[in-house]
Image 1 (cartoon, one colour):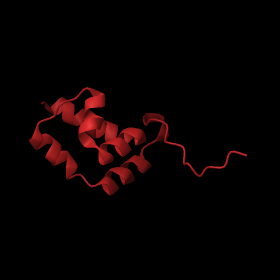
Image 2: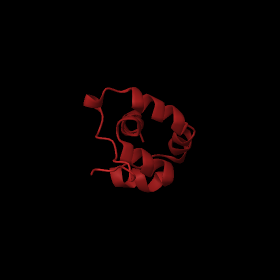
Image 3: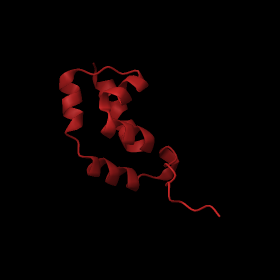
Image 4: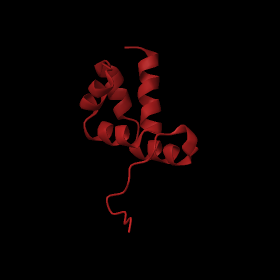
Length: 78
């Protein structure tokens, strides 16, 4: 595809908790939902990016530049 597509995926991985969960569960489906088709080489390279590294970076981002985090299923709102 292109460098722009790779950058879009990396940006979503860092800034979008829901996309990150989808990607690390089913990468091809997550990319299709974004409307992106990466080459096998690009997808293989993205799969080597450790989730823990992305999670750490995401946690350190200012909340004003990330998507709202997913609510924890165990969150008690009472």
